[in-house]
Length: 141
Image (cartoon, rainbow, N blue to C red; front, side):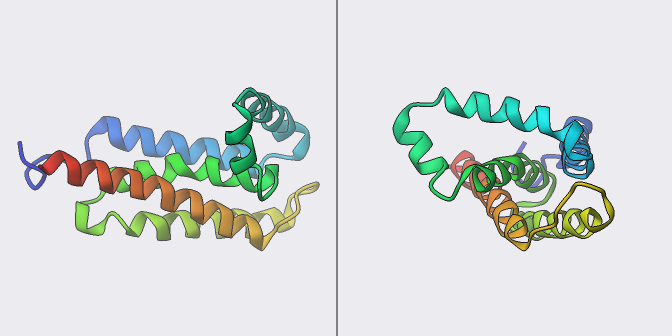
């Protein structure tokens, strides 16, 4: 099957994208008391990386690194659902999801919305999208 004839909306891809979106919603909209342990777990994993990697990842701070990393799977999953020429729209989807989360956090006790999170999350969606687009272009060769 070629790229043009391959089905994009396979059950596995839709389930993956839905699952990733559900995890993002759960962790970003949950009160800090619930989301805190997940954050600590992610930081524990990242602390095990070699020093040059942590310097790159944490150059902007741990929150920025986590926000970027958190949205890479969303950008990739949405890009896989779209035809190749529309895959860049997954970056806009990531930005829209992030902005929606930050707006929702204004009414959740203990959560503090931050426009910087939208930028970092969108960067993560961009990275995920680029990985998928490059992989799909290479697969065409």
